Image (tube, rainbow, N blue to C red):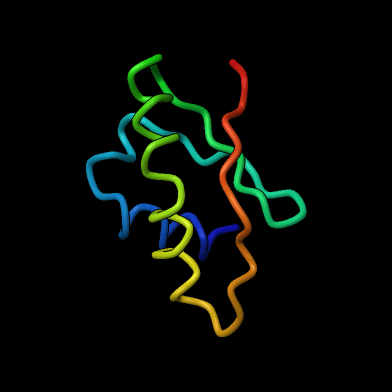
Length: 70
């Protein structure tokens, strides 16, 4: 989780202020957005984020992003 958190911050930059990575389960990243607008933005960018995160690993194991409830 520590390595993924570092990659998450590197790839997303300032967007990390709006999205909190809270866990991983069966290839899904659970992310808690800070607002409704952040939720919408996350849903729009999810495919690209997954693609960018998977390029750091030999085998692309991240399947998707799931929005975690508050």
